[in-house]
Amino acid sequence: FPGRSTGTSYPANWVLLYTGSESGGRSANPYATTPLIDLGEGDVPPVPLCCASFTDTDAAESSIGGTLEWTPDETSDLGAIGEYIVYTASTDTGDGKVLVGSSARGTNQLVIPSGTNRGSRTWLLVYTRNPDGTESASGLAFQFDTSSIVVGPST
Image (cartoon, rainbow, N blue to C red; front, side, top):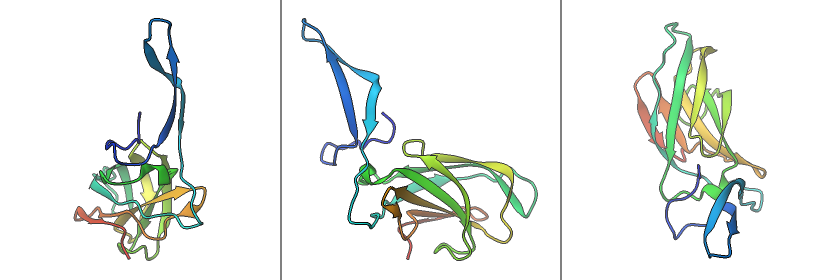
């Protein structure tokens, strides 16, 4: 199941419905799964991400295009993530950020259409969002001109 924690000591992230038979066998029904999203006290906890990659396939200097990919840190509580929000920004702390798009939990990538205006912004920032809101600092900042990665949350 996409977007689930791999460790057994981390919180549950999915509700799964199993069907059984008289012989004792059981199987998970892929159509009867629901991702869990933890709701808190109004603050979205930071979710560190790692291992980003992006290749700008747009030849124009003032625009970008390509696929940004990332991996949640292995200790991340994925239950705090409803979706990922991606911005371009002038700095790794989000100065001058402009929304690029969003991606569902578990996809861990965003296809940025060729011709997306970047102006003078050289950073891609990935934030997490759930019904409580958007985390206050990015979980990952990626400088695509130099491939520098700042694993967050940045401050």
